[in-house]
Every structure is written in structure tokens, then in C-alpha cells.
Length: 437
Image 1 (tube, rainbow, N blue to C red):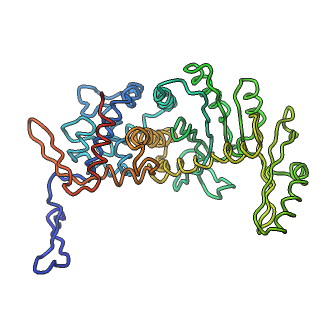
Image 2: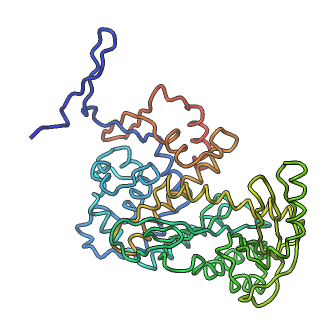
Image 3: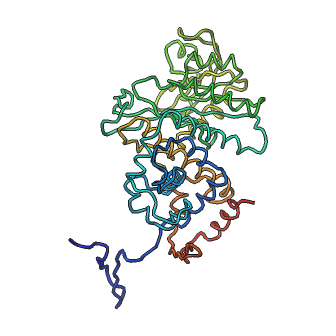
């Protein structure tokens, strides 16, 4: 059998110099900046409380890898871009990753990590969400005056016989329908759901739990619930009205709403025909759908361009100028789509390929925990730098993926970073910002 580890690869020569390569470099890592992840985890105490919730039925006298170490291994490697569980069969021997999780021996294999995933249950998901919300609360030095909670659902395609898979007519595919809740760029909820249910399912219960928890910490905080028309449900809006929670959500347009906005729509059309410049104007009126318990305030946007009329509507109990509420408050929810892309494309939250339901929920939450760590780096270490608004992919590739030679002896582990790394000054800034004081 060919021994590929000793194989030499020949590349085009440089003048008279031969260029060859092989996988014989020894302890070299591509993740020299990943040590920051351990610094952040220790600062937030993110994973240790979660590890205590796992039920470890193993014979403790034979255990080589404790739950906390495996959680770090799984979450840190996800943040570093290793979405496939099989990657760990090689990564477990990477001395730099061992150092990240506080170990000086081989880490858990993919089969061991798979068994960990399959111990997941409802209580684990509850504990992780509780810890994420507590970390969010602890991120404030003083009570905030206002919090905007963005709710949104997205599709998570499935390609096998995973428990809970269904065909979704809107997305036209077999998928899950996870629900995300963000406050600004901070993640509070990543909740896996079946896709054969209403997109707003359980959103009201989650909003209720979040509002109660946040007001325990800050009794006077103003909470605003924001979502698209998929979350415009009378039960949610009625609960908000009764519990002093503000809301601003989209409303699906219909003939009654379009009739209310008709004068503004006609005016926008007339102005466009005269100027050939896109026109928009706003109107405020009361309206109640048949399923609503009472009338509510609607803001309509009448817009006309070369593509024709495009009326849009939102419902809110916020006071203020109609145009400001629509363009500055409601439309700001569009940034949440970038956060979901970070979860799915940057941190592989859609890698839900386990056959068991709760194992897939745990995988989604591993991505969520990786997001919390990476978001902390962006929020604390990268303000006023070129990376202060960078996506997770960019932060990982530019600041964590640093080539390094690793040496290890009985006294220390030394990570020798690339001499020619172009962002040394920023690395130093990150180190100062993330080092405990």
C-alpha cells in the first residue's frame, strides 16, 4: 500500500531550484490565531456551565476526554472552519488545537464526538440558550434603554432521512425551519423546528421568555419585537400590547390595505410620470384583519418606479414619524439576514445531517456558541479597525488562520507564528483587548 505521508510532490522549478513538497513538516498548524478562542471562552465562562448539564453515563475510571474538553474541541473547531465531524480524526493530533482546549494529549475522535451529540436532549438545548442569554446580559456595563429583538426563520436543507424533515412549499424543498433571534449583532436564540409548521410557531413563547428574563435584569428596559410579515400574528401582537412590549412587523398586503393607500399610490404614480424618478410616500391609518381582536396602527409605503407600483405595509404600536418608523426602524431588520448568513455560510449551522432530532439541534447550537465567541472578538477587539464590521468568514481567514510551527517539550508549548504575517499590529491589538485584566 502506498504511504502517502512520505510522498513527494513536484512543482515547477524556480530558476535552477527544484520545488518539492510533502506532508513531513511535523507539528505545523494553520490555526495559530485560534488561541484567542480559548481566551474568550475563559473570559465569558461560556461552555463550562453547559458541560455540567450533560448526563455522562460513561465509566469515569476509563474516561479519557471529559465533556468540557470535548465541547471546547467541537465549538472551537467549528469557529475555525472545520464543519465535518470526520475532520477531528486528524485535528485531534494538532498540538495547537490541543493547547486551545487545555489538553496535552490526543483529543476526542469523530466517533466519540458523535456519541456526545447523541446524548443531547431538551434540557441541553434549554441550558445552552439560557447561557447565551446570560452572556448577552453580562455584556452590558449599564442597563440599556432599548432593546430591539429581531426574529426571523430560514430554510435548512436536508438531504437524508433526518428526523423531522418535511417538504416546505415556500422553499420548495425538504428542510428544517430554524428560528433565530438577534439583538443587534448578538445572538440569543437558535431554535431548530420542523418545516411543516407556521413560520411563527413558538415565536410568541420565546418572546415571552426573553422579555421576562431581560426585565429581571433591567426592569425599565424598552423591548421592541421586530419581524417580517410571517410573524404578524394577533396572538403575539395582543400579548405585546398587554405586556408593555413594542412591536413593528410587516403585514402581507391585500385589497383592503391597498384601497386605504390608494390616494398615496395614485399620487406617487403621477409624480413619477412627471419626473421619471422613483417616488415614495407614506400614510398612517387604522386597520384590523378578520383574525385580529381589534384595530391596530398601519403604516403604508406607496412607491412607484419604472417597474410599477410597489405598496408595502407594517403594523406597529410605536409612536413617531411614519417614514422614520418604516425606513429607519423596520427596514433595519434587513441586517439580520447578514447574521443568518454568518451562521449558515460562516459557521455551518446548516450542517444538520444527524439522523436524530436533538443531535441536530445540538449541532445548530454548536454553531451558535461559535458565533458568540467570534462575535465577542469582533465587538471587543476589532472596533475602529478595518475588520469592525467583517463577516465571520473574513475574521477567521484573516485573523485566526495563521500558519505556525508548533514545538512542545516538558516545560511549554510554543506556537511560532509566521514571521511574514501581514497583520501583526492588529494581532497585538487583539491580544491586549482580549487578555484578562
